Length: 489
Image (cartoon, rainbow, N blue to C red; front, side, top):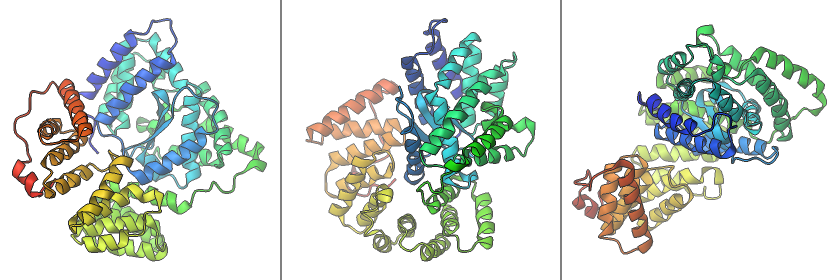
């Protein structure tokens, strides 16, 4: 994960200053004003690469979130769900009903009911417009204090640690720590409504209780390092007592099955640990767990992902094979096996395990990328192009390398303009804007597709305006490489 840059606090403060100065002091925060703040907030989060764009994990979080949102009354915002690449035990609702769950929270929970409990509570905060109330209340303090507090929270979300704490403590030196937290009344209302939303979505409200208990238990450092969730969601002891009483009063309404396969939750949990957790710590943890439960396919799967990061590909394949014997024909395991075979330079084996998965919607994006890549390596250009173009249509930002592969195919087919066009998208996606500008400009003189030409012109204009970049000179990818088709990242 890339940490937030040291300039983030300053840039966020500047943006918030402009925004809040425009709001009349006596006015409440309107829906349109909160929507504007939400857009700026999300742009800053996205620019710093703090979010995890993993289709398998996001699909599960979004599935749970959508089921809960379906129980809400009509809302002024479209709810979105995001996973933050931080090992902190935290979740929060941002402006405009953007719900964030930290990777560390998911890997610290035991089942989908607990995850639904936390997400449901955050959805209740958004539905009650507690964020708007908190932001409106915060106008009673100085703009500088408000901006500093929000900057500190945002840095903390990205795992900023000491930097975040320094920003926050400096901002609240005057004693106005309430700007970091919902009021206890807000928490009570979110619990009261949240447990109903959770129950109506067929999740067990007990998950919120056990989830909160795990969050409290995570405070092993003492009061100087209280988990971020407890800083922004006060009164957790009283909340636990309230939830225990509520569950007793509603014991006859208990949910026995939420319809989500427990294996799927565990697969996501160990996937996030395996792909994004600290390598040595995660390997040691999963290896220890596997000794206690050698027949847990999800642990084998997570350990395989860690081993891939250590380039121990044969060991990774061994664990994926064991997972597959325990979960026959599981599509998630098969897709990862195909990825490892590609990394080993064995596209034939990759293609063999990936064929036949088209009907499994949950793995479609990953399947199209890895199968298309295998077909490209095997010289099956038409089929590779079909897979990769389908992926671009369905999920254009998920795998930046898809554009490199399409540029490779175009180069081999002597479509030089199209190669530049796709390379422009590749560099644009990975935020290397000067290279993106170079390739988009080069594509204009060598393409005859009017739609692509217009798209390239629009992106050139956007890039120049955004970066105030001069006309590009030179690039990391030469024309001779494009013509030969040897385009490699």
